Image (cartoon, rainbow, N blue to C red; front, side, top):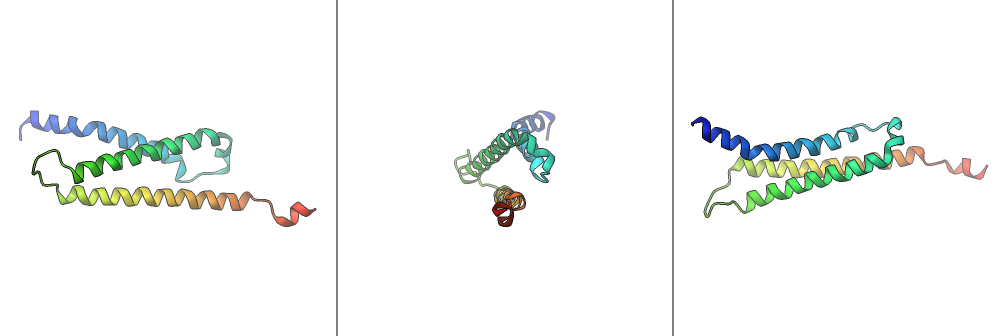
Length: 118
């Protein structure tokens, strides 16, 4: 392989990699959210929505590349197919994790029924 083809392959995948890194950076605070983050809740909700949207767009782009390759009879590698499935499962797992985390946060901050009557 010569340097020119290696450079063109690198430049072909660079925007996708930057977009994915940006999406993961947006979702980084949600791995462990604490009470100190409640003051920035509005910003964090927008950040969560944008981060999930970026990852779903990348999943759709990756799915389009896997199911409809640009060549006439181009075969898609098994690695690409497996990465597509793993990426989809990771996004689903993260969304379920966020829902469970939000539910537990709600349950821990919800007032007890005995304190309401007093």
